[in-house]
Length: 428
Image (cartoon, rainbow, N blue to C red; front, side, top):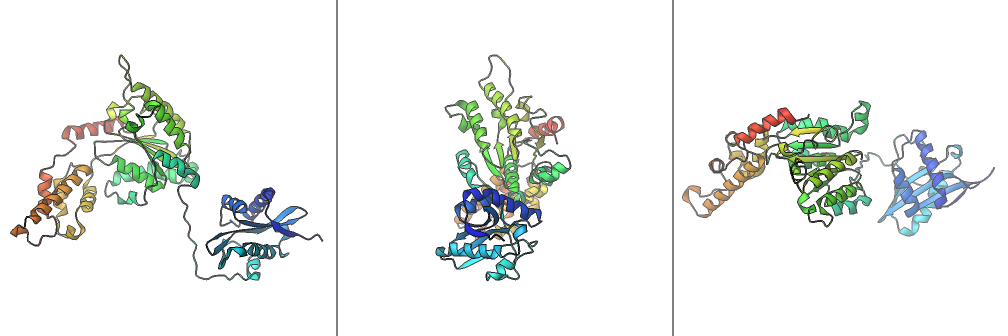
């Protein structure tokens, strides 16, 4: 009977590693580490193979961090199990990693792993009452340079949940955008094509940018905001800079791309002589179909003036949905006020009165009124007024006074026009 031998991994052994990987999966034992991680460790860390007649029949792969070593992969061909191959590979791998000064060598195994004798024989001890958690990092190393060049970033988790109220809008965005993009396999099973582009429209200051950022946070995708005013200074011109930017975005694995005030670059075309912006609008209209052909992408365009957009811009085939974002409802105003009122005085404030008094206010209006009330209360306290002796923060009267001196951004006419736009232009 021929004897196997143990040696260091060679680049030519890749096919053998792949065969072992597929054989392990076929036996319904899902490896803990991904194939790309195993192959990377084979070439960059430490790997041992068992060969018989120059055929790879087993592999053991390890990596080290500080004084901790990990077995990334251990597999023996089914036809050569029960021959001590696994134990000998582990021993050889440990010997190879010994010069690293490791104090511990560990391994994680799936619950479905049936053969663990090789580890027991080499002195590995099963630890009880342990649970394994892992988290996929959203941005991979090869994306970092592209993301930095684009001025993009990964937004903190939890932005979605931090939006108080606005439940109708949140439910709609969750169903139409987040769910199909976060679970594409489930969407495909039901014949749903995940969206690629959406327009958010509504009066100024209603939180369209906040929702775009929250969607990115919810998906844990890179967030890239495109600023036409900045691109205009590019030597290639605004149209050329837009094209270059979207070509660079293609280097990202997942991305939410946000263009605020998109009406600046998607204006109605026509007139004599043609507007200088018509070339930019034409370029944007060409970019969107190409963008839609790339998976794991979402373009979010926001506008305060949806009627000014070019008619071709909003047509079916370019944008999946055209969604209205209106003024905050009562629950949303409670949440917004709670954010700006100092926590130590919140219990003393009549929130219901503030919510009632700010019906028709945008989030930006409420923030302005809150800051005005805080500043006013501070200045009065600093004068040493007897009536405010011992005051520790703003009172309800301070906030109501500030509200009365704040002009709402959204006029009645604008609010009425917004409702008309919902009827004629929204696509839900």
